[in-house]
Image (tube, rainbow, N blue to C red):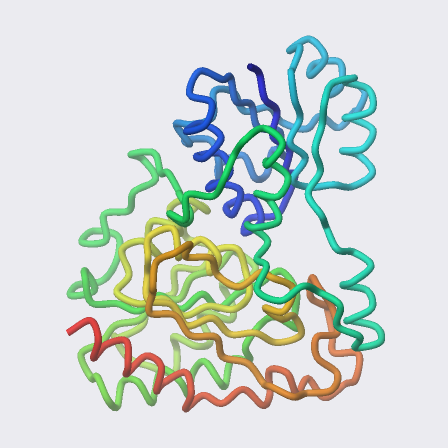
Length: 338
């Protein structure tokens, strides 16, 4: 059997396809499993040993389809389900299955606050609904994430002295403004945690676009903070997450990847919401995990992806985040670890 899995974007959504890939391999050990995604996200699945071939979406959709038709697939598992994947499936002329995207339900919730989204059904569960037809079931083992040897950061060399094994990774970035915890709240949280744990270290993680924010936050402290934003590749940043003692993060890709390493995790939610079934996914394990959000805010969630500005102008979904709740969550996790 030859199987094509499609997921174009984004970081967290692609990372959360890993249980599907693993379980397809378990159910069909002799199958050829190919994965189609965008070039900028290739590193997320490039080292997955369950994938036999990685195919990158060409700028020309017709060229991509020509390439795919030459592979003679038996089945397509569409975990993206948009117009482009519809065209691809239509022109491959093979059996295909598409996951339920719930776009209408999401629109009703974000626009009219009418919630028809099925409760307790995670995105990963909806991915698996797509695979039932080929006999694949969720093994409950959570996410996988595979790093190449050159992606693994030697923190004893790359980070300041005494950071190794003693740092909290704080993922300060996100693609959209309304998913980012404001600088003053990050600073306040670190100050409060350092009052409780003076020897604790913090590594700020994000992309190049987050470097200035990281510099501002780090400048409020002396030697306990290292700004890693923009200094490492995506997979090297994943390595920093993997080696952290605890992870704090906004609703963004690296935060969604942290469960692959069973990291104690505090995730912070602004304009988006876990009601969409996109909470960090740990499978059947019982992790040290906490969701921090402003509950009962009548304008939230206002979007399923995030926005570049608050449509109401007040940004209460993040400005009213209780920093003390973040600190209490970290305290509980540290006590549990020790």
